[in-house]
Image 1: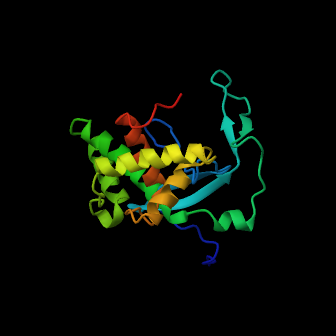
Image 2: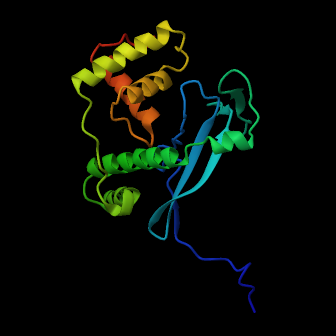
Length: 210
């Protein structure tokens, strides 16, 4: 008789991370100056997209290109290795990690499906892109940032650097926008602000990163 607590459960599993087509692993960084990288692991389990694990590291692994069996080199994210504590774990924005990495994978799968001729691979990519969206529904998109908003983002970014907040300008910009009453997402707001900063650079409201 099989012990129900130790019996192997048969599941149809297809790993989505690293991304099967290019081997790239998405990484979430909560802050410009955060010493932590949060690495989400997604899988299609019985046809449903699930976030099945997270790696939380204060270091980055670099694998030598010409050394197949070599150990990867490791370097701190922010200059020094950090201790992983309960306080750090409580500060991980799980909802933002889930939403941002889900959107990243859905976009890549959608682009793959849209760029291929009709084939089993194309149809499967399309099915997975649909599964990666919430309940299979199209993702709700916020309206594009207005010119006035991007101008204000650029002004606050410059102010952040002027008052000594240059190491974490996105955090400063987010806090000031909230204080001034702008509509900043309650989930993943920091990432939203980073995108606005990038848009401001594209509009030449901010100098390019050098």
